[in-house]
Image (cartoon, rainbow, N blue to C red; front, side, top):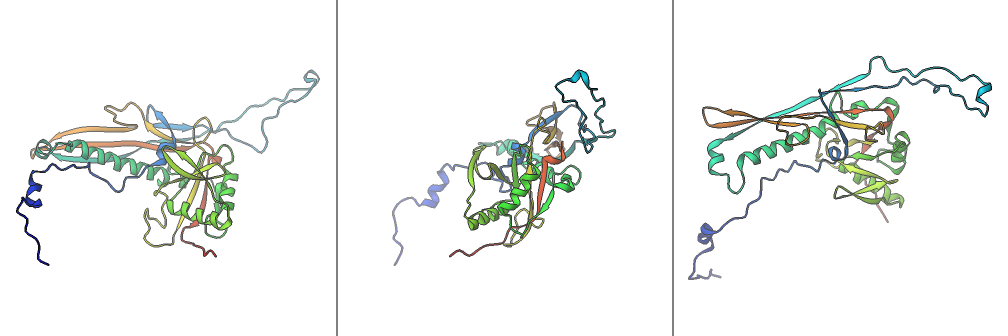
Amino acid sequence: MAEKNINALAPQTAYQLADITKTRPQFGAITPRFLTRLLEFKPLDAGIYRVNRVVEGDTPLDVLCSQEPGKEEIPQGYVEYQAKPREYVLSSISTIINVDTKVQDIYSSPYDQAAEQLSLGIESLRERQESQIINNDDYGLLKNVAPKQRIKTRAGSPTPDDLDELISKVWKEPSFFLAHPRAIAAFGRECTRRGVPPTYVSILGAVFIQWRGIPLVPTNKLFVDGLREPEGPNGKTNILLLRTGETKRGVVGLYQAGLPGEPSRGLAVRFRGVDDQGVASYLLNLYCSAAVLADDALAVLEDVEVGIYHEYK
């Protein structure tokens, strides 16, 4: 059928006079970063955090428990401290953002080009911060789980029994599990298979499944076979269980306080000037670390297989 001719302005031509509603730049790598939102962060004055621990023996300090204390000698003693406690020194995550001032002058309506570039740069630093808190070779959570706090899955898939075993390791006020979304899905399948579906809880405006009242918080920084987004159906990862907060002797995040022009926690943005080609430069520094105050504040379930599925009749 021949296309009908319409004696009117064509849409392609009318488009030239139309206003276009635009979005800000959409960065697909941005995640909710629940870990850094749920952790308690401790501000530092000089970039160093010393974790003083008591040297704990097999028995606690002797005390007297008697109805007639005057007739018995009260035990004497003291509590020893570690002679060389661990100190955490803040590390920096840095990048430089360049913006052509001519582009900024001409193309900054409705969105300021420099502001958008800085915003995306800051998001990138925050993503790296969460990854470092989990994976850093010095202070990362995976590297700082005590040997007695490490367990392996019984059959590959993360089962309710495995998570119960984790809870037995962090039984003093556990805060949340931390797992890759694929691991959480694998746990959900095991719950379905056993007829014990997990319940749900709303935190930070999001809905999480929970086990024994403890939410399973997703992050793609607990890699599957070393990848954030594995391509194949199978792979192995880890699941963490944390107790958070300084007053609970848990896991705390660390940051430098009082930075000049600090747009957000632990972040410094400095203008480096404009070069001869009219390119403005900004230095972004994010200072961060994390500390585990007690061994029983953190445990890990290792060798978690995410690709096991079941047939149901």
